[in-house]
Length: 214
Image 1 (cartoon, rainbow, N blue to C red):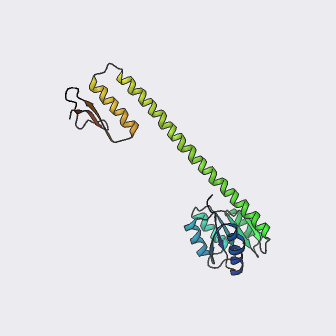
Image 2: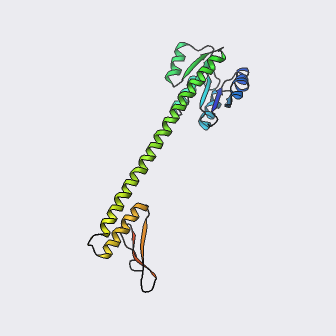
Image 3: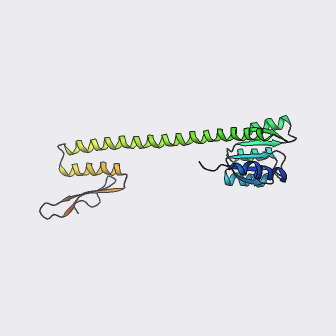
């Protein structure tokens, strides 16, 4: 399992050090730090952490503006809001802007761990759903290609056993094989039984035969 990254956007140096050195770092998380909102936003957009711990009362870019910018940039990153003085209206606005949880300072370590685990568990499930959806789409695409290839091989068998003239049989076989291999051009070479040399029976580029009989 990859190491999860948590970005702490907090201007209080003591809280910053406590979260990094006592709580998150020793528990195996990769910790990124920002001391103001602008720096935090820059790091968030560049690093795309798994979780953000965000103080609402931040210099240079307040917490709510931080969340608005994340939303405007299309960065869906789980965020836990931390604040000592946030009003009910500010907290509701933070939730409307995508915050996953809220902790009132000073908070208990157990409260912090519960909020972190809940937010990360939700993010893990989201990633798993995305990976599963992507894998299913790729498997479906491969299956469709296999079905198409079998249908093409069936057409080749029908052409070979048909009463068409030999040059037309060659042309249709090469045309179908070009489709299976998904190439721009394809050639069919036959062995001359008398000279044991290879001869180009037909070469197709699209539906054109640029140099037949070469």
